[in-house]
Image (cartoon, rainbow, N blue to C red; front, top):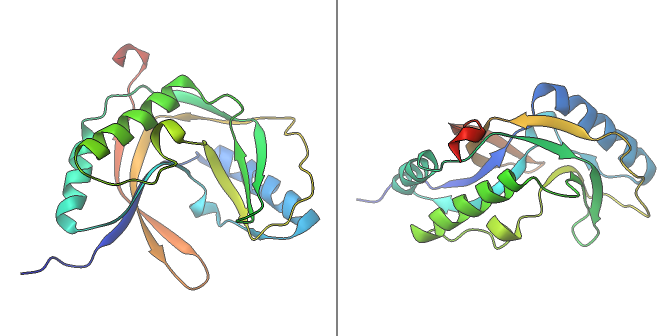
Length: 184
């Protein structure tokens, strides 16, 4: 008997509502200069580990792995703009990623790999923490981000991507709390 359809999944942090508005305003300001497609508000996220297609059985295993991750809550400050011209990706990220973010991404990646999952090579220790603001952008130079956009990361999520002709949509499958600093 074969398992039901596969699920295309990743782990991520989602900005709070107060951070989404300034991120979108920034995206609109930047794309007004050089074009591009601004991300939908519900699509703004910071990927921790991209897993890809998994079976329903593997999906359960991913939830068990994530539930076992012990990491602390932390403040995230997006204080840098970036552009990857080969992919037309305009993004906001961290000049200096907080150490708890690095540890969370590295621990999650190590646990996933130890369980036999292949994750995107830019996950874990190679993570470039960023939130994609726009796709198909064109950009000559970027202004300095004068006011950082901040939020408190209190949880990380397991998310399913659903691909559509015009864009992807995301469905949160599970959330995993991050503890206070005493959890270290």
